Length: 72
Picture 1 (tube, rainbow, N blue to C red):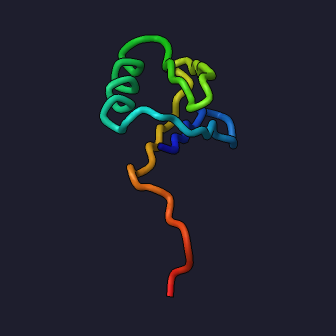
Picture 2: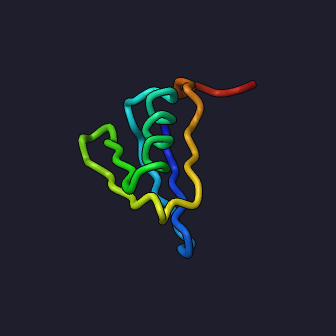
């Protein structure tokens, strides 16, 4: 699942792939917004930490497999 996190006062965002499902990611984001830190892990095992006060938006991609082939 692709995740994009927008950072306040910064034109760039953090973008990575995660093996977690949308429901689990939403719960982690909700928890982080009431706390102090968003803690997520990408599909390679890296830990991503973002201070809650710096989060502008979180975009969670659709749970859809990648398509292979050509569209007619």
